[in-house]
Length: 118
Image 1 (cartoon, rainbow, N blue to C red):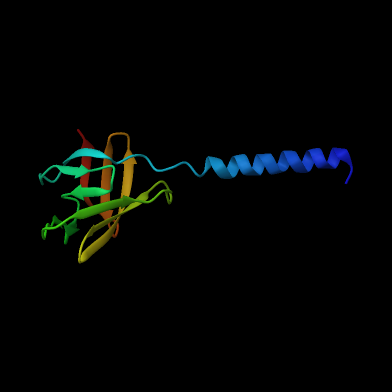
Image 2: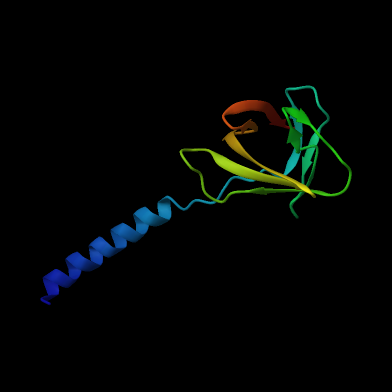
């Protein structure tokens, strides 16, 4: 390969890698204390993934007792993330739209609640 071709190939490789990494931004942090638009109790999401008040069943908060965990996806699909909420034996995956200090949770396309970070 001639030197001029190597420069073009290298430049294209760097450009492709830069473009790929630009789409790999990590998910925003959801750690904190959140107030809910539905009037339910304050929700807490901790650094270690433990959380409280996040499990919804049939559109309402359900707490059966015991530990609860929340795990946000690291990549967005069409601008939306997903969050897996577990309170064994229950588990649900919700869609999440995050806009600054608010996140809106959806189940099957139906809005459940908007949370505002305190």
